[in-house]
Picture 1 (tube, one colour):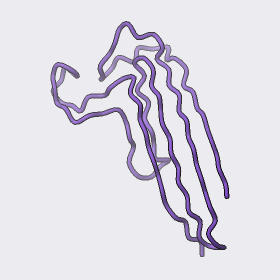
Picture 2 (cartoon, helix red, strand yellow):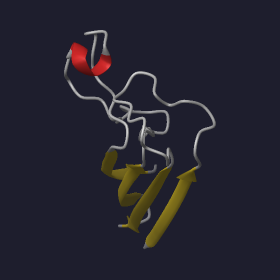
Picture 3 (cartoon, one colour):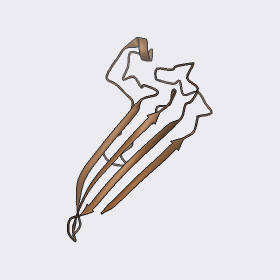
Picture 4 (cartoon, rainbow, N blue to C red):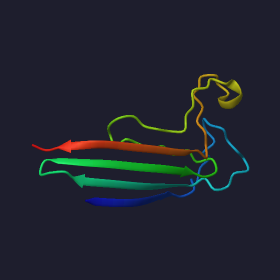
Length: 112
């Protein structure tokens, strides 16, 4: 059995993260933290079962995503709206700064 825990931190950006999302001019801490947890269990010589979880905590106007490590889909702070009052373009989807993004992956690995 293998258990791993991780933490990552993105410091405040020197620029203006306002861009294409709901910008709060009063927010000061445009930082983000990510916590991960991974569990892996070898079932026999060839089969391993795993579960990985991650959550990104965006603070202030930060809007970091959870990536899929080069495979699958990226999960981010977008919604399905096309509201012009939020992104000013009516093109949507809107990116939400300060969101909490969660991801979970479960699977099996067979080596032959």
